[in-house]
Image (tube, rainbow, N blue to C red; front, side, top):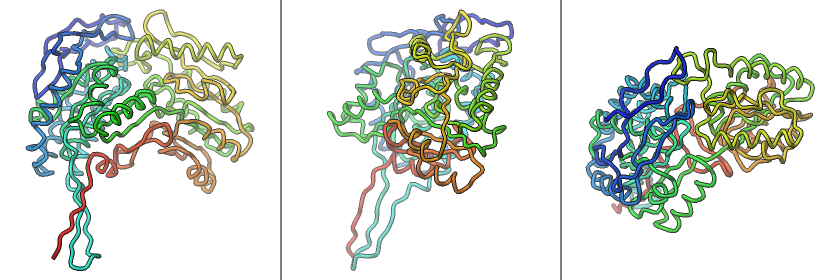
Length: 498
């Protein structure tokens, strides 16, 4: 992989940047330039300096990648499950041993602090989990029809597509890659143009793991060109997307207008967190803060709306302010390449501007800002962790996904009221409740309109053996767990006359 210039360190405690940066497309087991030679720039959001210029995939490159995946599919799908699993085990080992390099690449492209980076380690565990699911891709049998034995097959779609977001590219790519490959599919994946570097590095790891050429192909490009071409491609039979609601709608529309390919979506969130007066405040406060501070608030499952019972609202509010100020502070400056940095910048300039617009709208509306509300420093796209007190339930900061370190705190009086308000959103990805009353916890969990519910915990709590996905406008289909195996396979009924 040819080296590319890396932005200078901004702190004396910073480690060196990546050894090398791959900028080409990964197609059929090789790194190749795009057909047109066109490139796009990737900037370090901590320094606002150029990190790399990456080859941009267009429709012809999608065609090439799909052709490679199509050619690789027959042999890959005919391999036994244990055989396919062996490649995932090898890939998991490589993820672990390369976590440090992945961290450096993510630091200069998305701004994620190296000291907090564990995506390579967590994704290695996920690969091993799916490798262990090789024998769970099974059908069923029925003897209920006289003179027949009837069975079902679970079979791969063929060539599948994966479009992954910029906020957690390694994790999101692995969610899709692991499930697709263990079920016998081949894959064409597209990274976000904001943070493509780690996904390309995963391509190199796939090759090092011995995964046959064409089984995994990784493209860098825009959603409007590369993503649209994938969504409309007649030889891609299934596509999995994680990202915005608007892009999810566009992908479903493109699929409907082409070959009606299967589409699974994991979209945005506006996750509520309810704190009842009997809650363990010492536990709830740090978890509430962590949920919005993790990844600089750039995660779809972040608890961005907190509802606190009025009787404890003042105490909870000021303890949360203190947690924001303590947990969101970088000890030695805002540098993702320093190990003691805990909070990174927003992903890029457009994301920074979008978040500041929401904050300024809240100020203009007269809402009280308990802490934060301003840019952090004069270099890089850093925003102070911000807590907005009692905004209107219909305001933009309460209804729209901000995708940054901005949390809204509102008060409530009773259970019925707060559940109505918590569910008053088009999103339904994650919801949480803190209470010592088990019956109330179960009532609330049942009534939450969300795909995942935390009781006395909150996001980012998830486990690989439990399904993950949204209700309502937060998407459809599930990732993780045994349930995801059905998302990546077709079901076939077979009738056998005796």
